[in-house]
Length: 359
Image 1: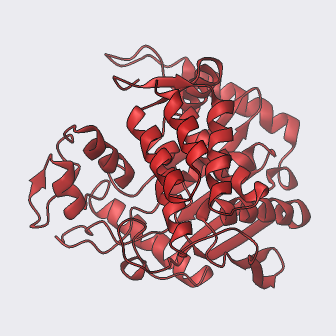
Image 2: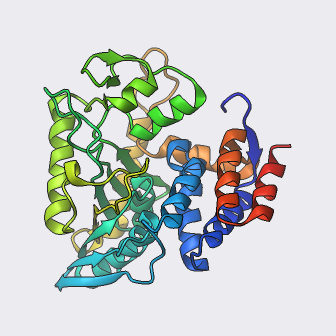
């Protein structure tokens, strides 16, 4: 927990988030979708993609740059593939619907691919991948984003940090879920460091002149660095190509920023691939093999400084169980940010409820 944070019950925080989005005109279903994505991030320790994003999302709705999902529509379909237009719906709203559509296609065809364009930042990619794994299907989820990262060898931002998530159901165990960005760290974590007044670790970012920096403000003016140099750079560009081709999204260097006062709608693209593995493999036999794999992994000798070996998604699942039981850590500044956004939206009573949590 960050010093000065307080614990808020996940159900309480979810209700407050729903009320925040209702205050800017979203339907109850759309507000619930927003809360589901944001709360899940907080439960799993991804605070950069959780509650702290509420004022930004609300601000885009209030500015007329994004909204609910009333105009979401299918633009093209061919067998197990579908292209959906989010019609400027907030990212989590369109992405949740696209994920469920991909699940339906996999149930029908054995595989489903849904590309969603004219969307915005959709939160943590792992949420959608685990939503699929919860249906005992395999998922691959990608998203592009504004060009905030300098490609390997460049000093100017051009590609997005472009998330990739892969989830696999694991029988008796929590699903495997790799959720990563193409950058060393997600840009949201740099923003959080700036808000908290903390420095970055070395090797994360460069300033506007291309020099290494530990200052999050300088990093935001410059660029986060691609993971593994040319590997992260290539991955980001590949995801941008998929988004541009399949979803009709803008390429990264053309995508409007989510933050600031650009006054432009975003055309971010997400791709959701779902696979029904039981069309190709015996379910009981494969599930047993997966459980045995986890046990072999856990039986490996640990390196110095480690007490166990974990697979991707396991630590987040453990944290989610603890935070459901004991509450989600929230900083007073985050509550104040949401309260100010509610006041701007003409909901002073809701603002007072948010501020009362910090007392």
